[in-house]
Structure formats: C-alpha cells, structure tokens
Length: 267
Image (cartoon, rainbow, N blue to C red):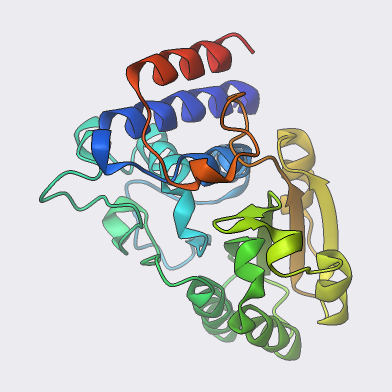
C-alpha cells in the first residue's frame, strides 16, 4: 500500500467528517497529528481480518488517545470495518460514532475511549493475557504526550516491564500541545524517551509524519516492551490549524474546510 497516499485519503476524510458534524465540533488538530501513525498501522503493520474481527490471534490496537477519532474512524472506514453511512453519522443524534470511540469488535474498535490513560492499562492487561495464552500476536497502545501526565501511564509501564511484555508497543503521539497549551508549560515532561527507557522499554524516536520510519519502528521486535515516540505537529497538514491550541476541539466553516482540503490535496 502507498502509505503517503493512504495518509492523504485519511486526512481528507477526517476534514470532511469535521466539517459535516457542523456546530457540534470535533477534535480536529489531535486527529490530524495522528494520521500517519494510524495509516501506517492499518496499512502496513497490524494483522487483522475484517471478516473475522473476533479472531483471537489478531493484533490489537488500543486507542487510548481518544481525541484522534477523526483519523481512527477514517482508517476503519477505508479498510472496511465501518461503512460510509457509519462515519457520515459522526456526532449526530442516535449515532454510535461519537467524539470518543465505543468498544465494538465488529467495527474493529477494541476499547471505549474517553478517560485518558485507561487505554494504556487496558492494553497492558491484553498483552499479558495474550502472552499467557501463548499467542503470537502483538498489542499496540496509542497515547498522547499530554496523556503522559497521568500516573496510570507509568503504573502500566512498570507492569509491562515487570511482566516482560515483549508483545506490547506503546506509541506516543508527541505533538507537544495539549488542551491547555504546550505540554512543556502544562507539565514539563523533560525527556519522555529517557523516562520510558528507565521504566524498562526499548525506545525509538521517529518523525511521526514519515510513514517509512514509522513502519520500521513499529515492526521492530525486542525482548522488552517497546515505546515508539512519534514526533508530530498538532493539526498537521493545514496551515491555520498547525500548532494552534484552540483547534484541539473546534468547528470548520465552509471557507475553512475548502482551504484545508486544497492544502491537503496539493501536497
């Protein structure tokens, strides 16, 4: 699969969903920063079967960073878990597809998002269960860097190392901006790579918008749990959204949507 083209398709889909949901608004910027991560996972890394979503041997992706549903739903749609009608219902009354995903294995959704850091703990439990069953699959957890302010992230990290979960990979979307502002100002995390190393992880730091680098890092295996820190730009791909904290959750006007779409199409 051409991951660069796949990423463009996901970015355009995410923008359309953001515009179509109207005044309800959506988590635009955090969805855009995760596009290449999600594209690489579904386009090149994860082992899954749309026709057998309950397969015990499937790889698991636990999206703890619940604010990236625009990227997440778009990918699930493109690979066949969600229909066009499903994502068109995003954030409408009666829909099952909200600003945080709800667990539904038929839809390819492993975890109900919303409470930050809970996905990391859930994923570590999954990895432990799969390891004890002797399965050869892998478990991935996607977390945000602001989410790493939460203590549960580090309790889960200690557990992953203690139980030698070499089937577990945590991916940090390191976009350096959270709801209240720059992560360095809200809670200076110093060096996340060194922290995860200290907690017993094999750490790789990559450009989070380089699909080839992401693919190599995410396919890497180790005798330790793995941490991939993906350096990204919040709002990546749209000039007036990139690095602007107000776009964490916002609405798109028609004029803004058309400008954003043109910028993405012309890359």
